[in-house]
Length: 527
Image (cartoon, rainbow, N blue to C red; front, top):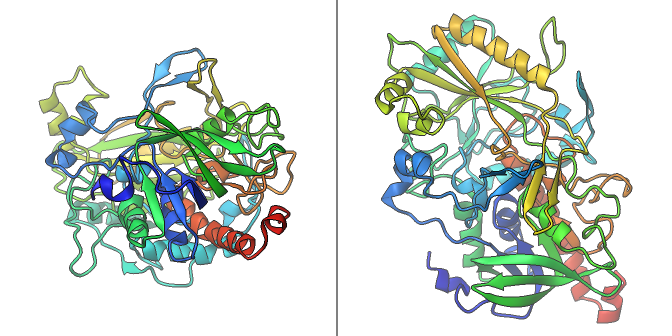
């Protein structure tokens, strides 16, 4: 797609829009799509550009050793040490390089759940409230899955497309798990495997951009169709510095941004922040004013707090006598530990899924002292898993800004005993299904692709930033539509829930903007 077709070099085509959306990832991109046919005019602002389609999209050395597509600035921990976050600034956001796992949270995830380390709090709406929007998101993102194979999945309707099935090595693992009494299930995936679809089930999907545009990312499935509608305008390479308000501080009036060295102000009837949990919080903090001295919409003091990213480990089982010939390995998960634990830890442990097939180049950065040939031999004989355990909202885990405006992350993992038990149990399971050598490694502060919780939604303005519609308690026409609103972070990929929520909030925004459109300016100001 040509950047110039969307005002890339000239800036926005108008001074004022019904809705300005900051960020084009799973939240902002889906919201733009949902608003495209509503009669609302939308400006979608992205700080990055389109990720290029090129041969290097499928080159593991370029991506994992050369970090070809890493374009985020450095963030800092509380000691002032910089780190490179797993965050990408492109049209489509992090979905350009995600593994397209598009799973629903479970009914229990919307309710209060007790863990050994504390409570996972209730959401301000139920699973049943959310379910129709899950269905809509699954249709748009072309999700393939099996309605019946996971007993933890509460759904009454089939997936839009059937599960893609397992290649022989994965099917062997599934059969072995089933013989042990576990319930291996198909991962719901967003890829274009329709009749005539573009997906070729290659080895370069999870963690790679799709050179064929056959991955259901927010760019391909939502942003491009939204632009084609004519009612959504996209501005790339534009960094929003702050959200602006009127003299009372109770209404947002637009945004101030930098576009190719030029500072601009764009007016809006409604402003939506969809930058990802860290950058959304940072934008609100940067937007402090006399009326909002601690950050925009932050009378509760909760902006930036309750940062969650999951407790993660990668686990690799190796059978030196047997090659794993899988190309598209990421098709299986098990949820037997999702709501239950063990005799010595009777609390939920988490979620386990296969990841895209590891290659030597993908591991080299983590194991620089091991020759690449040895890593390639090992990964050719490995089966590769990702283990998630819920971390709990903790106010001291938070996003702040340094004195010079850089992003700083305070994060101390919690609920770690549950994750240790999950790692222990999976290690035993992998050995039982034929992988005698098992290696695992936890992840650190830089692995934040599942970030959430920093602008939490709730019913009490004293303890939350947003209401149940993701509208700020303090600012009438300001919304935050990404995983920032999550009161908790259930232990699966949050992408589908972000998209579903965008469809839900789009209805609210459409109704409110339409109502204002049919009133006089004085009447509209009072709405």
